[in-house]
Length: 132
Image (tube, rainbow, N blue to C red):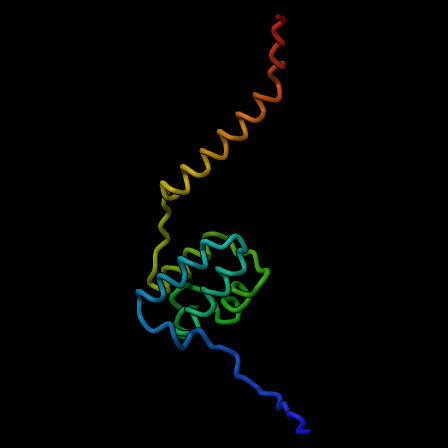
């Protein structure tokens, strides 16, 4: 009987910054990160883009020290909005907000209407039985 030898394979950690090589990819990457509810996702994405562009260059363009930029973009950091704006300008991207899509809106409205109908039905008295 042969015994299968499993060798532990070591993989290098994924360095996403090496894939952030043009403006469109960077914009899509940051947009996807900004849509996540966890603010650390956006901070991590900003850190990866800053790494791709050169931390020292981004820090200087944002008016921060290199160490301050690292601290600002660390997981769990709570940077001021002004600081995030400065970093975004240094990365040559801008923040854009938009309303949710119509499909998402209609789904939310339908769910709200369903909840309202359920509550109204619960408050309504039961119909009286007709006697013959």
